[in-house]
Image (cartoon, rainbow, N blue to C red; front, side, top):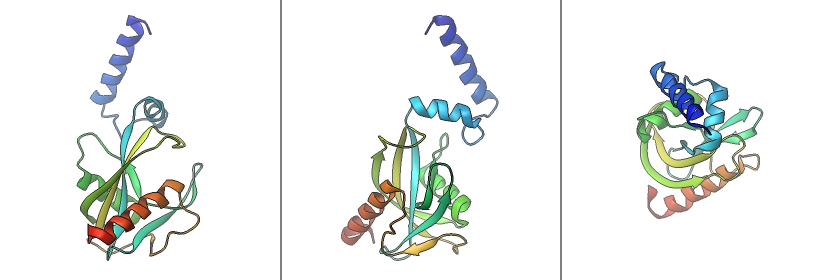
Length: 161
């Protein structure tokens, strides 16, 4: 990359910030391009009512068709608590209380991102509008999500309650 190309790139990145085109306002093609080269943190929001159940939602898009844990990417300067609530409101229509970070997962095979998942244990603060609570991991689930839930259930049996 030449000095001129670097200068252009820096100016374009500064323009994203100046025009508030950061996540979630960033053009999707730009987000995908950045995400292919930089790891971006995401929250995986495991909601439980009793420490033994967990909430999943149906997802159907070009990357997955089946059950998944609600999740989304952290926004600039956002806390885990705020990110979990933003994701929960958007995906399941409820507010949650962040309880504990129970793990971190670096995706080596994510279908569209260079992602770092922060697996968060939360409890419900409001009534559920979407999704379903499970006590056993269903078959048709995002493969790594079954690992995240397994970790939640094993940690919870020790000290998450």
